[in-house]
Image (cartoon, rainbow, N blue to C red; front, top):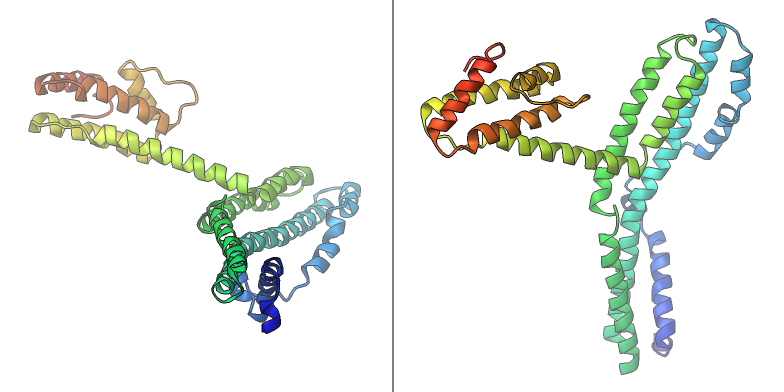
Length: 316
């Protein structure tokens, strides 16, 4: 202990960091990793799957003739590749989760040890050096916790990656229910690439962002359709019938009827518009023609006009 007190501040800091590197070996790793140990030697498994990736089995497929011969080879290659992708994704998933926990735990331990040494060790100069190192380590840990997808956001990203992979796998399974003449190996390769790439962080972020934007627009349109302030019962009741009918079509994803209604009242619907796009067009139109009117009489007159034009679709 006395000899430790005589160490220079630099050596004490290094000793603290080395101690934290060694500490994890003194504790069970399962809670940190979050996954049970895998009894399978996945490296050996991937080595055995190599012929399905390096063209060896593909050559057998090319040489075969007819569905009876080709289909089983195609299936074997596809399932082998799925197995390989699953192993690699599982390793990727574990590494992401472990890093998000391990980085913070390691830096916390370094900070705690340096903080303890600051309080108990050496002269003023030593205490100052250890204190500065402690603040720096804990400050770095705070930055790490805020960085990228680690900590809280990693859970959402992993869930989205799993969902993307499950969705991509559907096309593969559907294809394998067909004979090779209807779904050949090279078609399957395209779906396999999509399955492999579905387990990526950029892919997960893209889907989450797109979903958030869709929900945002949906909420805005719903507020326009449902949030209008109408005072007289006649106006309110008729408007409720119209908007309930439109929202019912939206729920059914009936872009055809929504498009016909928009055209009937003179609105232009761009080619390829989805039911959500058309709902937005109708919502903006109703806001301008009804909600923006200052008097209830004007709102009722606008509803009367719409009722005549939209009579083939809804009575209100």
